[in-house]
Length: 147
Image 1 (cartoon, one colour):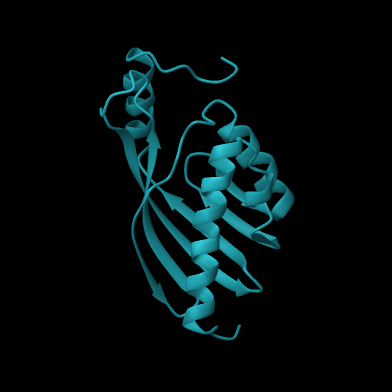
Image 2 (tube, helix red, strand yellow):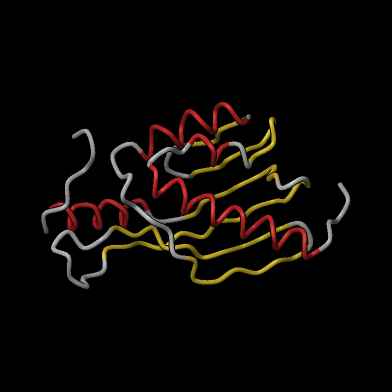
């Protein structure tokens, strides 16, 4: 695979982040899957390996159903050739409307394939931290969608 221009990779990454923001705002995650190639791979250590855009779409839409209010502040990222590594918070709003922080960290590694698409994504986080955060959030009054 050719190495793409850094500006193209950077722009595609920012589109990826912006799409996550739009999906979080609307609760509709199908467009996020469209940023992956038809044969893309999403390695999500808690939910397994998804091969192909439609498998990615199926899983992300189900995973995000109970937490449409989750949002994803970007902490940092770096680019090396076609690869982007980033640290993105998985965050929930304070159900009391205050400034209490409910989040856990996630390292995302992406491989750019051109045309604004990603051929590989790996999400690395501690599922125990995710569970603890959701439990703390619901104890504070947060409500999961459809539960």
